[in-house]
Image (cartoon, rainbow, N blue to C red):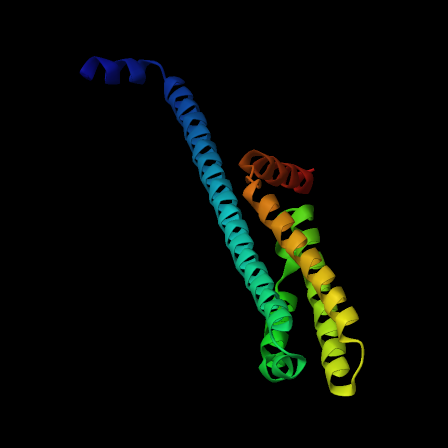
Length: 194
């Protein structure tokens, strides 16, 4: 050890070189730690986005199934009961709550175009079913053509079932792709620095 110290004393420029090399190593270490932390943050963002997408899909799938079930109950009641019994058994407030749940959902946050499109169509069909339900109730109260309205309701209900099934198939085939998300985040960062 003593020889090393003596060697450094005989070569005065060596201390500067050691300091320079040490500074470069420190810079590389700082850049490496920053890069590692950035990668960790990107992975966390990606995992959070995947989890959010999963929760949104599960939530709207439950809403869509509940909506289908509610309107199926109405359709069964129409087909089994007399018009007067139907009039007394239909729960308009429950129908409005189902439609409000569909309408309150943040469609734009769903992960793909097809899921957004399916959800919007489900919303549209629920409003058509509600309007048709009003027409059936009016026909019962005022002696109108109930059979035509029931037929329209059945057609719209089957339309709702098709959209719900299409939505479910779409979400079953949905697999989040983490790499494109990471690539987009990296591209955004590059665009900001450029």
